[in-house]
Structures are given as C-alpha cells and as structure tokens.
Image 1 (cartoon, one colour):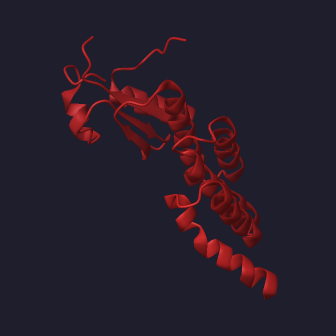
Image 2 (cartoon, rainbow over the protein chains, first blue to last red):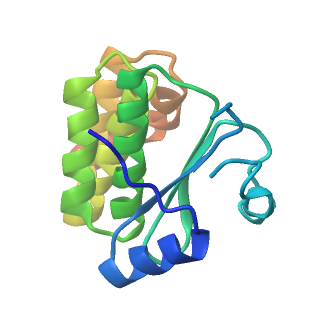
Length: 32
Length: 135
C-alpha cells in the first residue's frame, strides 16, 4: 500500500484538523 | 519530511534524531513519538499505541480500550504490551469508575509481566482492590 505523503507541514496539520483525524509525521535523513 | 527539504520543521517539531516519527492529534498536539527504527510488526504496534493515546487523551474510552486490546491480542510479547494492559485498565476504570477494573489490571500485569515497569506502576491498584473488597 502506498502512502501519499504531504510535504507541507501546515497543509498536513490543517487537513488533519478539518477532517478531525490524527496525523503521522515522519522525519528522515535517509538517502532518497 | 526530509532534512534536506524541510530542515526548519525538524526544529519546529524538535526532531533531533532520524528517523523520528510523531503522532499528532487533530488539534496539533503531539501524542506519541518514536526515535529510531523498529521492525515492521513493532512499528505497526507503535502506530496503534499512538492512535490509542490520541483516543485516551480525547477521553474516548471505548476507542482507547479497543486499540489497547488490539495491541495486547496481536502483539502480547511486544515492548508495548504491558503499557497497553496498563492503559486499557485505566480506560476501563475511567469509563466505569469501578476500582475493580484497576485491581484486575494489576493482577494481569503481575501474572503476565512481573517486574516490568508497568507492573510496578500498578502495584497500588492491588492494594486498592483489598480496600474495595474489605471496606
């Protein structure tokens, strides 16, 4: 299953708030 | 978020090590955090614990209990299982205000996870049980 990550933190936070859903934030430094 | 693309957000969310995974609730509040890798099944358990914590903080006791029970049933030997037992008991108690729920939880922790940090935290609940049954 693929995940469509949102790279803009504020956009993700606003979407979570508008949908009343929790949010997962992944911080990585792994090579792309 | 990759450090090369979103360095400012690492500071904003206090991500000082990678990988870091944060579970936020819908009100922008951090509820659960992991620094470092976990194997797939353990990571799934971590996520379930995060969602359980979100429900717990919202005082959605039924959802919290359901999620903690899923962790206990699916990963009884995981690092998180004793914590899930502990907070399932708190969720049940919070929903019912029946101290027997805490006593039952303390008994389960004592039998299944002796010496674990969460078992130690539940020791007063065993005492509470004796007060309940004798008082």
